[in-house]
Amino acid sequence: MRRLLDEPPLVVPQPAVLATVRTVRALTKGLTDEELLDHRRRWLRSVVRGAATAEPYRSRWADGAVAAALSADTPEKAIAHLPVVPRRDLAAYPVEQRRAAPLPPRTFTLTTSGSTGERLEIEYPPGGSWWLGALVHSRPHERRLRPWTRWASLGDDERRTVGGILGWLGVLGQCRITPNSEPEVRAAEVARARPRVVIGPGKMLVAAGRVLWDTGWRPGTWPRAVYTFAELLESDTRQTIHALWGCDPIDHYGATETGSIAAQCRCRDLYHIADESVIVELLDDRDEPAAPPQPGRVTVTALWNRLMPIVRYRLDDMAVAADRPCACGYRGRALASIDGRAMDWIWDGAHGRVPPQRFWLSCHLPATWLRAVRRSRVHQLSDGTVVVEVEASLPADVVEELRRSVSAVLSDRVSVQVRCLDRLTVPPGRWRSVFSDVRARSSS
Image 1: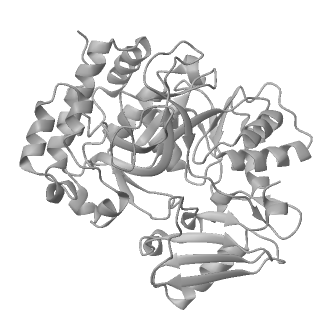
Image 2 (image 1 turned 90 degrees about the vertical axis):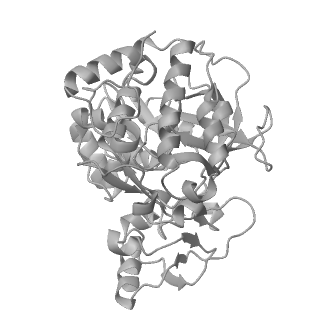
Image 3 (image 1 turned 45 degrees about the vertical axis):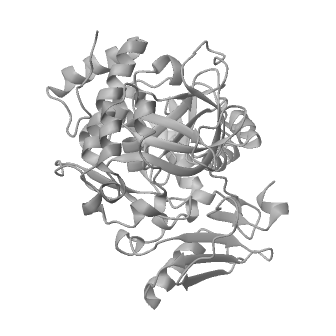
């Protein structure tokens, strides 16, 4: 029986090139059911042992539950012995207390976008990012991605794209696109780069695609594939991307905390779960498995991050498990549908719409002050006024700089207000971090 690495790597295995080639080849060929079970069981045990020494798990897990999880014969039975962890439990502890291993050199920290209302810092060990890259590049027939493929990301944080989606191998074919720039700037840089694959949030791709069309460009020799992530891909956004870029997008589902969770294949049907990297549960309100066609709350265990364990971590998304094979013939674990993070366009006060990702605080606040924000929300009122609410105590000069930075994204006709609150009111139902009441303009 073939075995990959004995435990999730903290550093890139050496020699790096040989280890990468071997791993990508093994993953491309595919693991047998027995090999996959052995891999998931070994990596889960390693993660659970580490998590038992770090918060919040150390305070919540009973010794008997950890022992039962380590002795279980399948990963699904193992994690059933452990309690579900909501985001607030992780956010209650600083990074240092959530760390389960010595910090390797070249580890980088990603901060969640806040699309679920709260921010959380996650440390990516270089070995974990390497593994994510090896995994995504082992599916070239599904996603048209190879290590040398020229690609360009229209996301606002290239580290999130490289580290969490394409992994360590992603830097090889990367075309540099200026982050946090106007759609006109990004469109011009994409046109010069002529990438084979374009990656980005759906609404960002729509905005850049329309700018390219205004310049007279039409899809032809590039791109050959479009890859979406970071938000719910609604059917109208999918159709618009297809019309603008000439490719039906392949949607990716993941989270900064867990890395890649599931992705569509070339058939754009089901979302194939990345079994080699995560364990996905769909749970009801009692934390019991939700059987299809009933939706369940997405709960994820990351097998690849031994530095900062994520075990039975509850996301705010809902999904339905697939009860049939994918159109491509894939019969493994998959999601039939995902009800994820939905965000609105924001009307710019003139004649256009601004993608919601351009209002993430990470685009407007330096890291020093971003860490002070516990929760945030952007709400455009029916008269066009944009209200930025932050659960934090920020100095007056920082508040004014934030207001000016957000205003720069919009026209002079839109007023921007920044409110610092002791606590943001959380409405019932799904949290929406960027939403607009200007329906006639922002949703068309």
